[in-house]
Image (tube, rainbow, N blue to C red; front, top):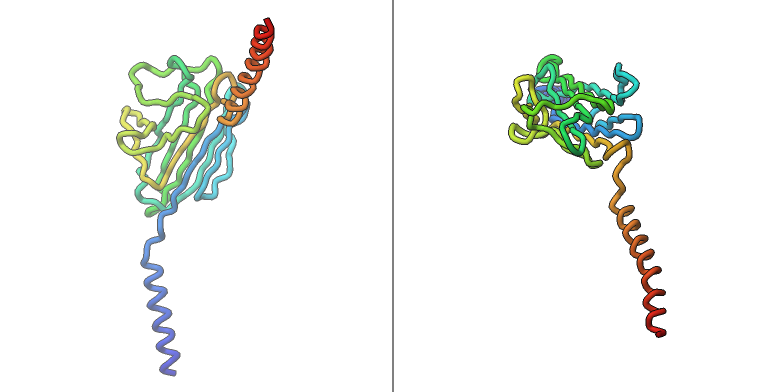
Length: 208
């Protein structure tokens, strides 16, 4: 009987320690990509399927929403990050983030990637925080000095290291940029064409 009581006491003590220990914060990454006429989102570290957006046919949009246990995420009713066309001030894509309290240390995160139409809006000159599309993935989240997300007052929204948001916009006119390996093959092909034309010409000159 004494042994049984000891086992019960030990189990209760372990349970009390487990309940009282805060759960570790899980890092979450949201990767937005645009390809052709579709936008996609991949979330790592949380269960968040792609959700459609109510948008006009000329724009691509995707949304994700999930809840995490992370008190370091500051709540916000909406911050935005802008990706501009390769030149000028025309907006190519907008990423919006909303973080709402979900009880205690829990936060509900909603992120949306929206592509502007060809005749889209232009970013005011007063806004100097943005990225430009170049066919590569850009990290939009960051700290108080490098975050690309702006509040309605123009200040940067600071992310903890537990949430990362990236976005890859199309390179230009809906055509993705070639991979480095494709560029290498293209350069090799051009060199081969030049050599094929140059070597016979040099050989004919040597005969005379």
